[in-house]
Length: 169
Image (cartoon, rainbow, N blue to C red; front, side, top):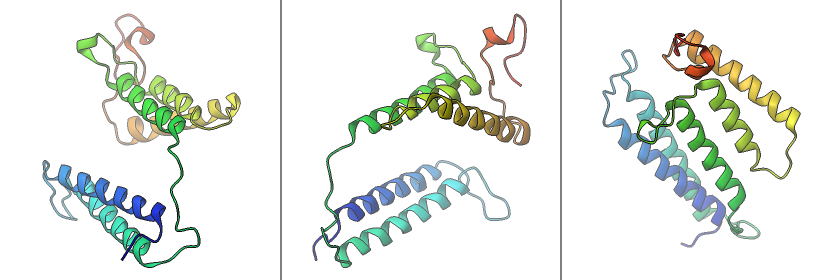
């Protein structure tokens, strides 16, 4: 039994690997049950679903024949670089890095930076569209995480909030 669709095979393996990692990581937290969910419940459920989806896709890639065998192309280095960089910059801006003296810059600047960096992964860059997307993402994130969930995240950097102002909202 050989691989009949390379793209599906490697996609399925990727889903399974991610799912196993999430499920394994959830083992460090209390899982609970459906009525009393612990912090590990969602990652465990997500891990199981991703693993199941990956198994189905991988099985399909071994059984269903495709015309060109779903051959893999070359690596898309540009999108890979900019998407990973956008996520790293987002994390650094949101949490800072005290050992490198990088301050917490807050949720809003982090979302704008992430959106603009990630948009460089594509072949076209339209400033107005990216700015609109970043604004919508920032407003939605503020409403979701700060207003509704009341998470203690810095929204703006301390130096932008003014002297003596609290950095948390």
